[in-house]
Image (cartoon, rainbow, N blue to C red; front, side, top):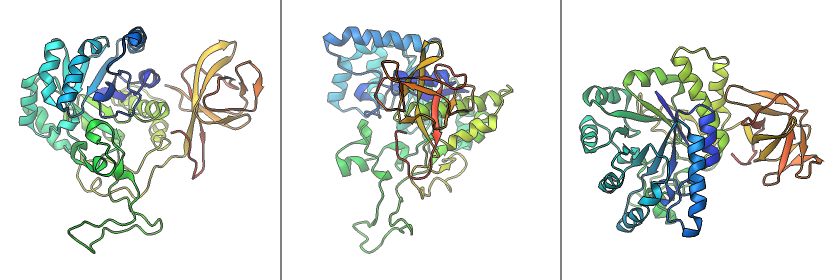
Length: 416
């Protein structure tokens, strides 16, 4: 099965490939459902920026190599959006996309005409949940269906048996949505930011003290004791890492990780865990396999569930807690700038003498408290802060591309 990971910018794209993804998906400007992600592809570039965008395009090609890259055009289009898309087709052709992810089939003829050799993947937003719909979309020109998240394993098996020459993709990890296939109007109603246009305010994750429906006065949803709020609208996160064999047997061609708005650390750690599990499934020897899987508890997440794959019993109950995590992401090691000294991209403060952990594509973790930090002038410093040029001399062997983290207690809030 293909391992498909999220990338919101060039850094995330590089890291998900480095940590084991076969393919990555990115947003295309304001045409994707993660408008606040650092989309690699911005629409309507000014003439003065054309050269800069060409450079970005070349960087994407270098990072991508022989791996796959899919671009999301998965908002629901209004007429002005269609006109804006048409104006940007030549610009989109600059980028090395292997397929377009779309939910609104109204843009399919436009894309087919401009990109006659392109592949098209039907977004999960189109909520394809049965064999007849899958066959229809295949006949329309879709090479892959990203199945609705409401589809069970038994239904996937039936679709696979019934429809030939069609790839099936399914989300296996990350945030789930209260609304059917993510098509929600709650955010637009409460904040004026539409989730169907890529600007969701995640209103379902807010903490509600009272929930009463207008036509049923006095009838309240239960309040969870202790915290004085209920998360009745907030779904559990999806985690299928222990059931990859079942997904493969059901006929899934590509497993997808959610999280274009998550950190480099989140994307890399989750990608690595699924990469190692897929390798083990294929019969490869994977040292420290349980540890890589356990690392999924060390990234920010809500309660895990298996979604709708086996039954609705688990996912239909809301999560009773907010984000959980026991490690914080500190930064990443860049290129070697002098013997044993590396550039350091700091995300959260690092202090001299504290114990940090290095993690790599094949390194589960290694502790170090004997590192040395330097400022831009090369002078030793006591602490490194986000946004300030910093370098590091690790106290143990380390490599470019390693990530840094540290264990934390309850109540810590830093960059995820």
